[in-house]
Amino acid sequence: MKHYSIKVYGKVQGVFYRASTLRVATQLGIVGWVKNELDGSVSIVAEADQEALDRLLDWCRSGPEYASVNKVDCEESQLINFDSFSIIR
Image (tube, rainbow, N blue to C red; front, side):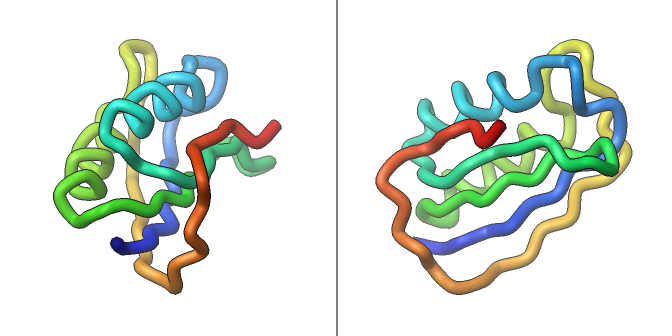
């Protein structure tokens, strides 16, 4: 298990990015959360095995249909051991 803090920049709010991230993360067995930031970006905290995290990162680079992703930053940090994946509002 690894813990990634991901920040996604571009047109990523108002395009169902959080709801789509929840769906993708749940399908991949990832736990953590996703939320909109005041600067217009989306933050994701994700914990899973390396393969699932790599697949999530690949998805983040394009996102849902109406998103336009400019940049994805990712840092690995200490595990928190979440129980599920959720949207923080």
